[in-house]
Length: 452
Image 1: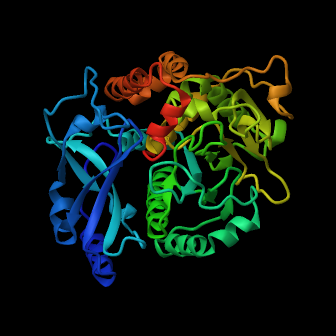
Image 2: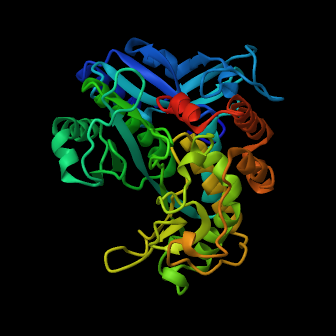
């Protein structure tokens, strides 16, 4: 697809997709995008409608730009209300089977208005625009995502861990061996590669690491993987939570992002003479993202529940610092080594979670990378220990209202988003803050546990 235009239909690709869907007895396709509340919204079509949907798109109201996590509706200058209509255009490259949902396929969509102009609130379009800007500067990026979730065997909306064995313990795999194996089979059957699967720290918590891909494909695969994880759990009678916190005072679910990049075909996070092998370009990128991080939290940790997760000494990255292989730093450099090539050296963002819209997350990080190409602020020294034990360590925002205020100060990011997307996104954040005003952590967790 050319950035800013609906896809030109590739007849050969369409026929190949139709043959594949027929072979696997697919009856319906879930056309999916993510809104400003971080919720995956869908319009489904019968498989017979694929040809028509690709030629003319599928209708969808723009009101969802103003939806909150609980389906209440707010408004901004550019969003809210039932007026207007959009067209959803499936990206055939994202089309994939959903093995635990027989007869269903998944597809990611781009949103356009009725004049076939890009919808300014389309987060996938925002990501496309950042990729196009970087491409003009001969910058290529790959991203990989780590997905953490918790499974519960309760049927009343509470959280009762499906397994309570030791953190990272083999006992947890033993407890849910059939679930774990079936999940890996389902992910593989959908064409998703898995680098790692393991029990995590919190009771009932697991993690899957997906490999690095081009950012658009990486985010599409993330949505597909989460769909498969949730559907697999349901088949075993488990409820699945990707929420920042499933239990008050518990270790939360992160949404870590790994990012590698090249400039003029040379890696920027390895092969240099800076700390950890950083090049000057890589150092500027980290310095810029570190400087932006308090405002970026509003995008990457956008729920009031997110700030119940951002606790020091919980591997959540609660301090505004970077480190080389330091899992308590908000930005962790996975440095070049004997086992990691310069091209595979990457930056891990640890303070984000899965209440975020991942297209916005990826786009915002790329906007920071683009801005850093003109140089960044001085890069502080890397932190080599738990920053909680450093007297002058700077905490990241401890509330959503603080991070939203910081976001307003990031003019290059707001310009990259455009006023329509930026104002609609912030309106949703402010409305969710108002919803949770004067509520307890227990109430916040109860309302968000099964939403994400």
